[in-house]
Amino acid sequence: MTLKIEKYLDGNRLVIRLTGRMQEKYLVDLKALIDDAGPGTILNLCDVNLVGVEVVRFLANWETAGIELVDCSPYIRNWINKELKRTN
Image 1 (tube, rainbow, N blue to C red):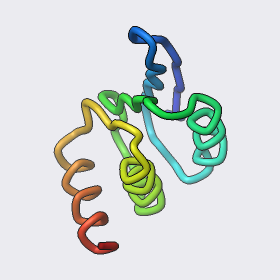
Image 2 (image 1 turned 60 degrees about the vertical axis):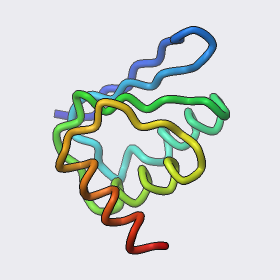
Image 3 (image 1 turned 45 degrees about the vertical axis):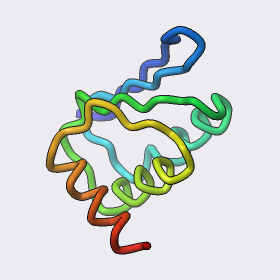
Image 4 (image 1 turned 180 degrees about the horizontal axis):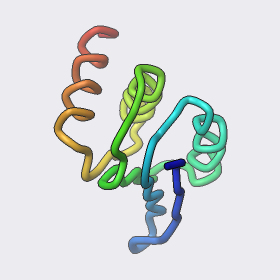
């Protein structure tokens, strides 16, 4: 399965919903979407079922920059938290 990206508005905030396998090769496109959307963007990770270390670092960096990560699976959330601790 590849990564499916859907965008929708929740009030005045853009939500980017991700489904599938989030791989490093999709990060450039996802970064462009987030850059275009600006502050207040939400990444909904409820249907992300596989990530690698580069994806975790990408997500941790965006969370540090103020992007909200929601509905993240426990294993991905724990990995992001470990990455944040490692870099601080």
